[in-house]
Length: 160
Image (cartoon, rainbow, N blue to C red; front, top):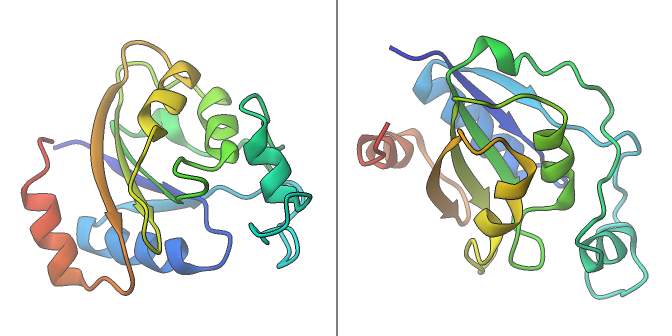
């Protein structure tokens, strides 16, 4: 039985709620990926091309600084990695996280929250930030509130 970690980034709280519920269902530990400078409501205004999130997402090489690099990824075999979908991909802070640790030989299961879009090019943009030996599993993009029964059913169908 592999040891599991639910690592997540949440800007508004939706992904945090989902990640905590997922960790309960899995019996897994959690780690919150936090930016060195927290995002404000103004930073997250996707309608403003000059907002922090818009500027970061417009630059594919943007790597927002992490608040810490203390995630215990070495202790886990499987990492469930959660985030909101921004501009049809993972926020670039997820690349910052992936580039800060050695994920060699690990399984990463992606899950996300979104009001309407899917994963888009997320996997293609995340793969270069990790070792080639990572086993990627495209999980699911969740919309709205998700209960434990829904997550349990989803997990049954994952090729873990």
